[in-house]
Image (cartoon, rainbow, N blue to C red; front, side, top):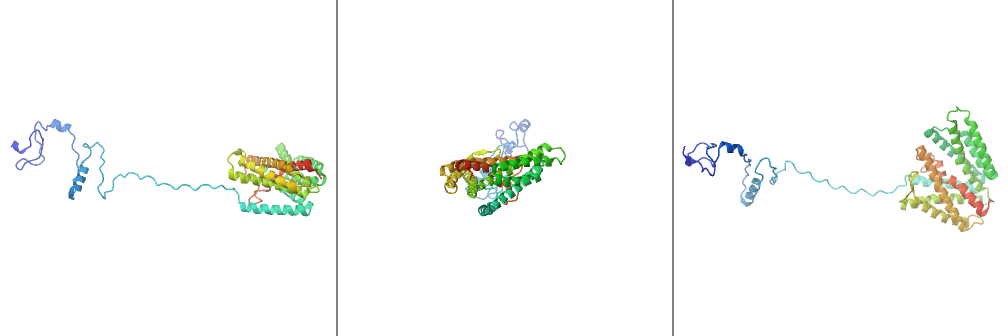
Length: 374
């Protein structure tokens, strides 16, 4: 074999000469023996780059040839123009549009609520200033419907069966007695109604007797007895104006609490009882009702003085708020939102009487103190 056909030992294998052995033969020698061949990793196979000509293409070829020397090292080769990467990096998610600001909602159909409120107000005012007895009948009907809603809910949610028949008859009798005989007549009717509830319930099995009669006595006091003070307001010579003052102050207190609380309310008043009520709303109720009370006492009530109206308005705001919270407590215990569905936008009759019932005795007492009972 002619040694001149191979490269020098220091440089290793170059390739065959024109007269040497076939391509691919590996010579033996100190520069490339079998032991070194086992210790040396093979060079990575780099594909040929098509020639396009120009220095730019040459640089591109160099970029393709540059990279890790061994196969176990990561390879990050730049793709050629028009080449789609095999594992493209995920694109960042497109920015989502900001959500629209949440608008406060009243939670009810305000159109229906206003319409029903105006209709009820027209009926009350018409009956109040035309014939007093008609207004007494309106109070009696409201009491009977309120008792029906309350006893029905107690039966549905708690299984408490307060006897409705003696409650309805005794409740209407309480209102009439309060108008005809004053406080004395109201107390006598209340006592007789309680006795009727106890006797009526005896016709049923004894199981649950105590809770049923207890609920019946509570219903008799809560709805008809408190409503009797409205009839007692009507007994005075300026009775219609006293009743109108009572209604106006209660409505203004509720409206002030809603308006101010909806716009500025941030601090909860009683979150466990009524999450919608705020301290700012209470301040609104006090301010609105005090102004309305001063105007009503000065211009509607005989011998009334404006500063008395300020005290009257403050008391009405407190009693109306407590009455609303008391009704909310009952509804939370029963697990319901409204006592009924009779009045669109309002719920039931009891949902409108919640602040009126406890306010009636407060207004009656303060007007008796300020200007007398007649």
